Length: 483
Ligand SMILES: *Cc1c(COP(=O)(O)O)cnc(C)c1O
Image (cartoon, rainbow, N blue to C red; front, side, top):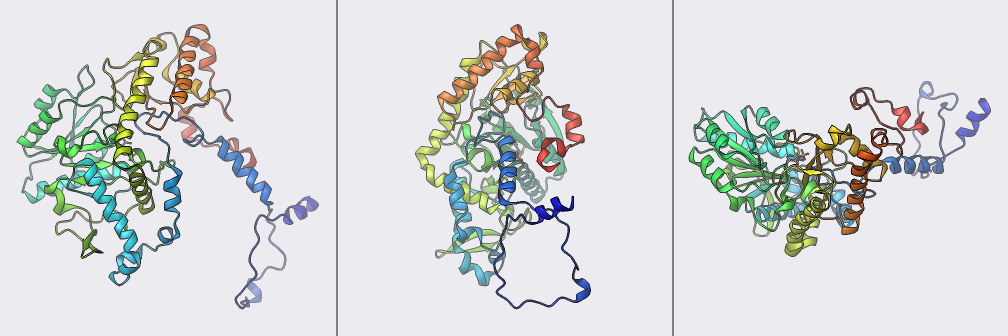
């Protein structure tokens, strides 16, 4: 044992530089008499451990990742290179807080200013603010802006936000956290917001309505002009959940459609990483009437010089500094790199790819809605479920075939839902291979359902009890090297 330990101690994966400052003399009682009994690892042990772990991880750099509603598209490496420039990555955020240092961070302030200007232009809004740290945080910011607007106008009675039942769960959550009563508006059988039900729910107490377009059924809400008219008639504001903006970017603009306030998901539309729950970025965009309430401080430009100002009636900071600045920088690089024509292609290709998958799979799986789709296509696995193979079995079988599973069982409006979002960055070859795998699985529902229920068999751990897995993490099993 002692021998093994001695050998472990000779391994090193790190070499420290020689000391170039005078050695401090520590009091004798603080010093060890013998070395700490810590096992050590050589560089190759460490490299193998982490490389091995990274290969067990599923990510967009190694797998097609058609996770509906999440837009798991490729994140160009160009943006990573820009975000790594030391001039940005080594900047201390407090430089921006101290006017005396503004001369030292003009470049970073210009990035904030220019990105906000571009985002506003892309969505047809008057201004944008990059501070919110995620889509949901942008929603909260947007609803607080709506609240500030009504408070300013003395609309104390406006206590309700309307949210369609096809919305992402973050919409009602954000409205509730901002203190509003949430009233759900049902969808009609075409998967769109039911106009009659919306009319019935609309009254003078409504402060705003949150709409997603295309919605989480993958469908374009065709009645936005009418919904905007109904909302504005009672001075309710129209909120645009911009998580699916990649489907319409460069084609039409939420501001032109009548929306008053919105959020963007830079990690969905503008090619920045999701990174397992963060860091994200959810800037807000506003029309003219919400300008005075924007979070501050804001970057302003005077005589070619950038400085900070807080709008007079600002709702507050919402976050430290400028949110996830290096994520915003990646989005800025992405937008400049693609340019006008490139951004238009994003919208076109996202829609083309989703409809291609729909066309190839519609005989093997039942589409949830009859219409052509925007950025994602939804199927119901109800016919398969009647034969004992559920959406979750199909998802697990895909993992064995080298694909991340699509979103399943969401939105709740579709039974046994399979929600597939190919995104614009995938080639026809990748989509064909994925569709072939889906079609093979549909065939196995009849020929060998047991093999689907036993999937996945190729992963380090097989089928998990999903509830137990979340509540009783067993790290040793996931990583034998750590055990
Ligand atoms: C992803 C998503 C959100 C929330 O965005 P996060 O950045 O994950 O907080 C909101 N609405 C829709 C429609 C989404 O797809």
